[in-house]
Length: 246
Image (cartoon, rainbow, N blue to C red):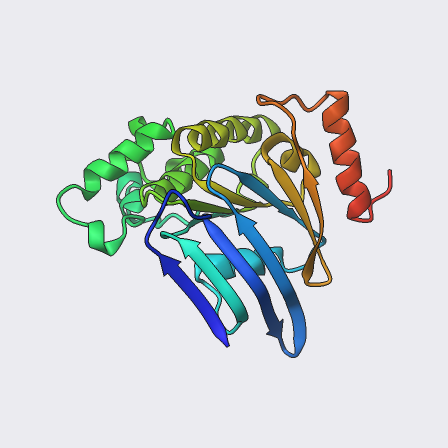
């Protein structure tokens, strides 16, 4: 039986709770009894080998994938940003961001909300631009603004920085941490990069065999530096849990 519930946002409940989640494709179990809780004010990184079900789990949380069993409860409305910004090329940047405003909140103020979100991500000066004129980092900022304009309690990120160059990626990490500190939403970050997980997350989970096989607490103070011995130790442990031995 599929059970997906969206409850009114409440500061006292987790951003998401998953119990006994199972999902199959063509008779093969991709998710096989996943239990997960994501509190507000926590960044959770989800790692795993290709095909382990990371993106499937995120899409279930986002309400983009049905036909599963178990219970999925989200507090308020989750929003999602993917590796590809997925901007509509014939709409300007501000109008693209407006698409993230939930139907019930649309009206005269929706453009103002979009402009405020663009200002938050440092892209207010490009609000009238066409998506194809944006750099890769600017396009991803617009996608994140579109996710923020819905005022989520849970932000879902599916490898959103994977296609960016190294310097832009670091800039986007700083942006995410700033927005996270200001808004206090819960974050599920799907990534294949253990260095990124260590740089951003409070917890890193390893998905294997359709279940969360390992959990690593990353109790390093922010801002974090990649080159410290503690960060390297966490990254090495995650690589070992992923079966990559250095």
